[in-house]
Amino acid sequence: MNNSRSTTNKQILTFLNENDYANAAKFLLQIQINEWDKLDDGYKNLSSLKTKSFWFDSYKIKIQFNAERIYSTSAKVDVDSIKNRSCFLCEKNLPEEQKGIKLLEDYLLLCNPYPVFPEHFTIVTENHKPQEISSSFNDFIMLSKLLSDKYTVIYNGPQCGASAPDHLHFQAGTKYFMPIENDFHSIKNEFGDTVLNNEKLIITAADDGLRRVISLESNDEKILLKAFNNIYDNYSELNSNNGEPMMNFICNFDEEYGWRVIIFLRSKHRPSHYYLEGENRIMLSPAAIDLGGVCITPVEKDFDKIDKKIIKEMFDEVSLNKDIFVHMTTALKKIFSRKLL
Ligand SMILES: [Zn+2]
View 1 (cartoon, helix red, strand yellow):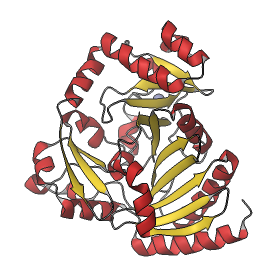
View 2 (cartoon, rainbow, N blue to C red; view 1 turned 45 degrees about the vertical axis):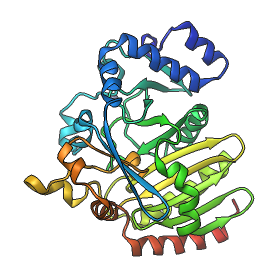
View 3 (cartoon, helix red, strand yellow; view 1 turned 60 degrees about the vertical axis):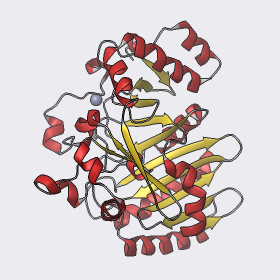
View 4 (cartoon, rainbow, N blue to C red; view 1 turned 135 degrees about the horizontal axis):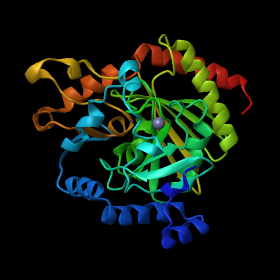
């Protein structure tokens, strides 16, 4: 690793020595805002954003108008576009001012200069390798645990929201900023279908009318990994396109209850509204944060126009087909009734 990217700030090193990764990250953000103008601009922009909220039966969806997110929302992620650009997550291409904190064996936590969360980080691997959850799920949950005092960690699949599908990365943001983190219990009570419930693992399938999710709750990382692998294999069989089946993840960790992983199952990358012409177009490209209940649009007229009906149409369209979801839930119940996890 090019160690020059790791911060040498003494206060941060002290936090790291105490395994206090959340405070190390928080402090990194504070010092990077002071020494990196672009980041400072990003947070100034964040403090003046327009937002609005919609209440559905048992959950809330917020809309954030954030013009700075235009590059991320409209990122070209097809194979040719990716091949013909230099990777903005590789260390050699990071802005000179950008410093990070090393996490686990080969990850670097960086401040995201286009924040959506009140505190927003990108966690990248040192090596340029593809965005892929099957080989990195364990890292994903361990990173969630390390940062859990203050942050939630998310993952976007290479074909449904990652703006760098060629470079493995996660994001971390302020805990409980996404409404689904608070609404999860009411969604589970109202719409949850229990796939498995034993003393070590709870798996729930839920279709709340907007989203099709599978959640995993456990305080045993090995059991969590096994359960994820089973779900991944089953979902892959339903998947007709090449590569990773479309999923977005939100992960929390709590000392008492352990992990809670919410997996959004997808049918497509962007809703038809995104591809409409002229006035009818709505620039919203849903990924984990949007599905978690903070929809980002970089266009003001779209922000003004979006209502409950449009949210429902868009979410419904990008989420896994309802019938396939029911079929998958039934299959998972069978699989998990046989497995000893
Ligand atoms: Zn890269």
